[in-house]
Image (tube, rainbow, N blue to C red; front, side, top):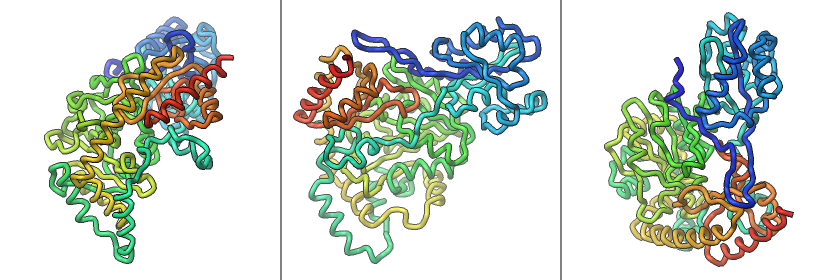
Length: 493
């Protein structure tokens, strides 16, 4: 059955903007299959319709690929010639080794591989953008020509650099942890001889959100929660909404899942359309506000994704950096299958301590807890969790969020002065996503000028023209803008 209407796979293909904004095309491979005698016209029409429906340009196709026994089929070879790209033929046993979301025993019997179109599109190691589509006698699927590095994180931009670089690549709030929190953590070191007891911290988190303790699980940061979700909840059709933090998809893939993507478009401000998520997805992951786009999705739109039989994972790691925590779902108990993740590492500067938590239905919490090792959260981390959800700490976090909003407005005003720079969407988080021609070169120039910024091309849906900037104080932003002006001037030469 052709289910194109249920799944949308738009990606950033062409950059359009004012003077100085260049063009970058995502490189694509189209896998094709067809019955004997399929015409060139039918293959081309299917490929063109598939690309058009996904918001992809035909000019971005670098090759057609198929199983070698089909490479001589005139309709398929002629389609490659018409598109002006090479036709790649692969042995059936090589395609049979490629994991695909829609295998077919009938196709295996006919060709020696359970998929021609999807496997041929993926065999070079890229990532599937459009699953198998069919016409009367042809099939096609679309993948990127290369895979994103889902394990790349912002700290890689500053590792081994010491204090030589101003860190705008990592989203941990500057000048943290505060002194009072350091003292609380230091005082806990005298208790290290005893095994960790998380009851007080768990109760404090529950009280902070007005929930019973049975709805709270403490974790070694949100990253551990993603692993637990991938391993313990038995998803059949997981979907990740991109661009977003890549660790959820990496964890799902490591657990053996075939992950589908809904990739939001820059042209739409990276806003979520709930209808883009497949109806039968039983696990959906989305960030709010989303890293790296800084877009804050309305709670009402996220709530539309919740339904019986589905786990809806909302990563709210940066929600405490939003004044008033607008659009938060933490604390909601009326949405079936809702799982909210929170991290205390960003606002409080505790990335090295690893502390976060999960809010979910008791049955889900029990499954996740059963997958945890014994004593997964250390005593200092438990003390930090209890301290960071206390009323005084929440008031401090709220004040910090308001300062971040002011500092972000100053950064955005400065970026608006550059014709070469486009800001993505409406930024509401402690970071800003920008697009600039030859972003990789600009990033290198900024590094030489003393600033580390996060590359964007490791996020599905983004490419080398995107950079993420952490929001910092006005003085730091002023120096960044001067460096950016210099980097753009050097790059344009």
